[in-house]
Length: 236
Image (cartoon, rainbow, N blue to C red):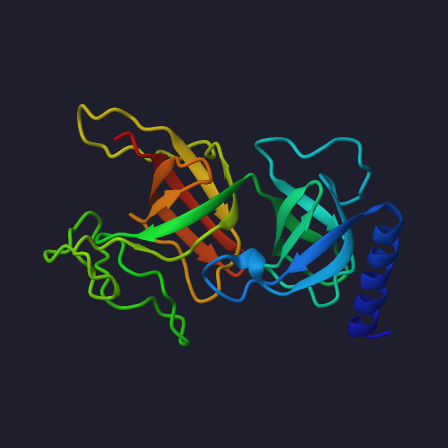
């Protein structure tokens, strides 16, 4: 039996199990930077567990959003969103013969480019849009990034809108403090985002959640599984 045939059988098995114990869900594949949940919707049956054996002995913990999805994994890709009565999840990683690794989100966020961050637009060759200076803290002398398409002279440009995300406590050893003597240490959080089509978060971008709280990204890394950022609460 070849690997493709085995994967197809495993995916169908997950789908059959989900039809027995899962919830009616909506599978959404984002196609644009703004409003990802407004994409095409495919109905599926799905449920999630905190362990890959699907023992369903405990719910996901608040500071451990990673869960394992029980659903037909055929045609599922990293970055897909799954919405049901339990919440909004995004697919983080999918591998043959194994359940999908997903993240349970707890926030809806909007990213805003600033003069310091530049544009997070990614070209067809994988490079970040021009106009960004990668020297930390260097302010654009004209007050607006060359890559930004706004004309208000501030460099602010709201791009990624209404993205499901996870906001939680940072890992041990992470410190978002500025290092400047006498500054008040801001509250620090970790942000987990799904893959955004043609876009990545960058340091110094401003983020706003569904409650209006404002954060500034101090560090960001993006892979084929999504983005992980360290950010601080804006105190002023």
